[in-house]
Amino acid sequence: MNVKVTIQSEQIFKDHKEQETHQCEGTIEYLKNGTILAFVEKIEQQELHFKMTLLKDKVMIDRQNQTMTLDYQKDDNCEVATPYGNLKMTVHTTKIQITKQEEKIEQILLEYDICLENGMQYANRVTIQLAY
Image 1 (cartoon, helix red, strand yellow):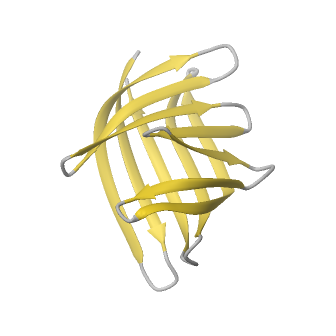
Image 2: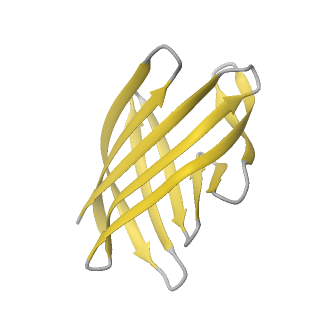
């Protein structure tokens, strides 16, 4: 099923916040044990391919073949590609909230803390709105 996807992300640092909003097209597939949301986010001249697998207690996000798992039970240790090389990253999930209307997902709210190997730490809040 095709959906319009609006992504609003906010990075919260000790001394400031950064926000951005992007709109794109995607698909959503409702399965027996979860939901798969796929979309392509265009940032400047780059296309980022996302596949989000929404399960009961966790969310797996695959972006450009890099996977991050948001899970209340354990922190995720993963790598993120940057223009300067890969950085190791620890992700601590603080909130996963999925809002539905008549069994269709309308909004996904994800909140998590990020700690990069270079010592940078910040909170991340991502709100994804879906329109059918």
